[in-house]
Length: 285
Figure 1 (cartoon, rainbow, N blue to C red):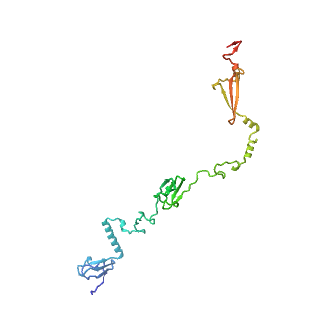
Figure 2: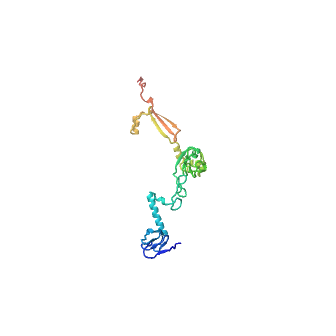
Figure 3: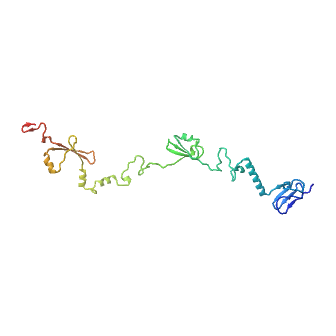
């Protein structure tokens, strides 16, 4: 059995012993300066070079050497940087697409783009096979909207009705439907008290109320076809220009209005004016 010596470098510099000397195959050499281990490949005397050794690097140097070799291989193969990392869901790993063609929810939360579907029935809503969580179904048959809260649009319980405030009066003084309200129900006085108050003299005297009761809207009509009439400049002119008693007047009251409308009709008394058959001094003209 050959005797193996362990050599060590204590001189300045790093690396194996080279140049003159003798090495034996399998003989180790420790570089105390550089921290590396070298094993001689074969027996050799003098002219020793670094190529005559197998070099074993320390951990840090080995990692650096390995990384450089890996990077060189990746560059030579044209691979991208992701090839340096392992697949997985942990830190520093490359995530892998799941069987459904998506990333797992443990890696990235589900992101839904909300779609709105207008449907005419519950059956049509449950038939929305492409609906995803967050999608809206507008039901025209019930005037309501539903949102899909769980996967599986064909299950009715997976749809949540969206609550909306009602846009109409719910009740009046506690009454609903066709409502009839009295004064007392609105917190006011009773109808009889109101009527008693309005008929009293608190606001108007009897004389004032009488005047209002006898007030009319007057509509004066004149001529057979409501044609224009001439006017006098004064009362004395009117007396001198007109035939005394030459006008007839008729009044009618239309109680269908409030206040009532009084219509006044004026006409010329034909007995006061000349006509084609008038008799003057025993003659007919």
